[in-house]
Length: 188
Image (cartoon, rainbow, N blue to C red):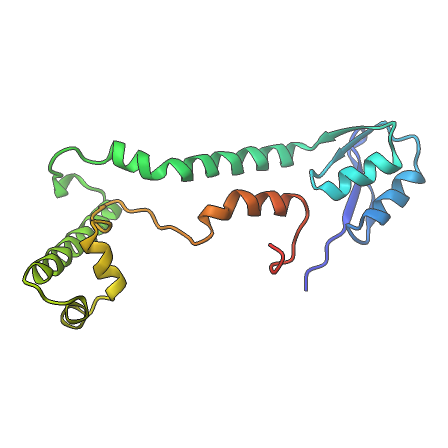
């Protein structure tokens, strides 16, 4: 089991002053109340620290530390890029025939996989056009009925397909809850 503490640092002197045994609000409040001379609190952006600082040191100005700002900016950038990837892939994808000789090794592996997938898709579509039921197509091709339905609905023809997670729709909510201090999987 992981155990976390809180480090108290004098940023002017660049020295660690104390290591608190946990990250509990009461511990931080007690530390700040015992040190009323604190003027600036550079803190983690978790709500527990903010509430503790507001309660115990209302005279102090609270600022976010550089690492937290960088981490939050990075997370926001990754989330923005991830949400736009499908449209970016479509916009930047090949507009005409691709010359496989110009591909990098990684692109070639993906391209070869896409060719195999497209051949299988064509086989599935041909069997369906002949009136073969989905259950029989699944038996013949060794492909799941769910995948066959995707092929027949035109949802499996993207060469540069994005992998999606069942959590994608909830990622912003989960990140907000995590940032607010919720660390219990069942609650998340």
